[in-house]
Structures are given as C-alpha cells and as structure tokens.
Amino acid sequence: MQFLNLNQEFNLSHTLECGQFFRWEQVGDWYYIVSFGTLIKIRQDGNKLHYLTKPRRNAEFISHIFRLDDDLDKILVTINKDDVMNRAIQKFRGLRLMRQEPFECLVSYVCSANSSIPNIKRKLNKISELFGKKVEMDSHIFYTFPEADELASAEVEKLKKNRIGFHSRYMKEISSAIISSSIDLGALSK
Image (tube, rainbow, N blue to C red):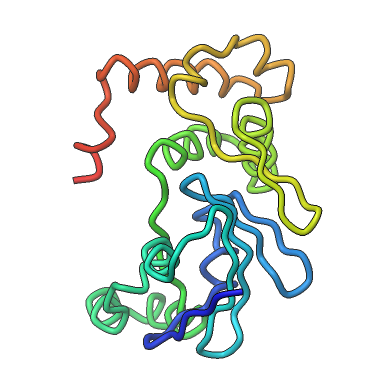
C-alpha cells in the first residue's frame, strides 16, 4: 500500500461522486477506479490518500488524475462570484475536476445524452468489458477502457445487443473520426 500526503484541500468522495467521472465502484471505505489503463484502489483518511495501483504507479500519477497540482484556493477565488456558487463551494469543499483520458471522456459524454448516471456507468462498463483488457484486484474484476480503433471496428449491432442503444452508432463514428485524424483529441485538449 502506498500513500500520498495532501498539502491542499481535497475530498475524494465529492470528486468521484459528483458525476464527472463514471468508472468507479465503492466497496466499503475503498474506491476502485479504472483510469488511464490503471486500476486504482484508493481511500482518503484525513489529509492522506492510501492507494494501490495495477500496474504500479507513483504518487505523481495519483496527483495528476485528481489535479492535486492545481491551486484550488486560486480557482475558488476566481469562480466565487455569487451566492449560488458560494454555497456550492462551501457544501462541496475539496471537489476537484479530474484529468481524464480524452477518448474515454469523449465517449462518456456521448453516452450521457438522454441517460442517467447509472445508465452511463453501465454502458461504459459494458463497453470496457467487451473491448477492454481485464484487470483484477482483491477478487474484483474490472476492465480498461478500449482504444479508439477497437470501438471503430466494433459492430453496431453487437453494441446495441449489449444495451448500448442509439449511442452505439455515435461511438463508432467518433472512434472512426479519431482513427482517421478527422478529430484530433490532442488539439482539442489545448
């Protein structure tokens, strides 16, 4: 088990449970997260994060995903412009926007159209199960998110048969556009 001392405000549960990221499961006090091809088992104990990763990653990796390198106080001063925002900041203190793998994030938002959070999670987990790589920890099985070429070559009917629904066609089209360089995820992130 590894740990990371937090030198800035951070709230793991607010960050994971706010609806910005979907590939996590909570088991007892632990969260299991699959991100950037890595399975992360993590929990917060005060100003310390305890974690285990597969494959093994360092504290910089955890800090990167949860944006612990951002100056949260500076961000909050910038966005705290009215009573509504002030109440949200106070209620969800320590919530941070996560860095996500761009392709997975894009597909997540394609799945979000006319869907609830449980349905988005189910669809992303099913896509990962069908096309990703299996990774196991503590007798729990998870799957990495597939690459764009794997979804681009997927049969729409196979996706629909696995309850991905009308999002299937859009996922395939976006994946194909990324493969053909019609969409440049690197340029979009800038």
